[in-house]
Length: 84
Image (tube, rainbow, N blue to C red; front, side, top):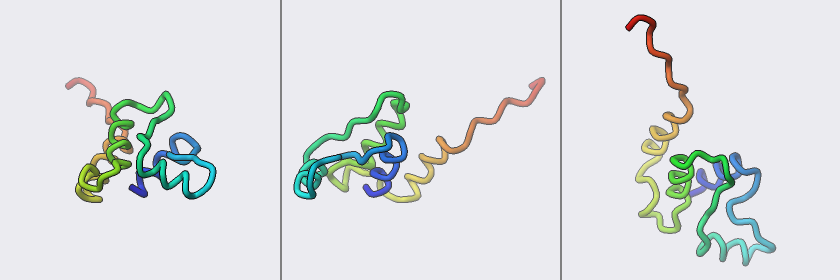
């Protein structure tokens, strides 16, 4: 969940649940769905929503699973070899 919040901030420049005061912020974290700014690729947005799922059982099962998924976004595709 914390990584999802950090990624959200990195992508949008704001917290996933901005609010006036701590009580309102906690309420939003518990109940409000997260929405992303336009321009975030849909597949990435869906995964980020999984990271920020309210129920821990709805989040990715392990840090290594998150790592593997994120590596697909961090590594650019390599061009195919010429002539083949």
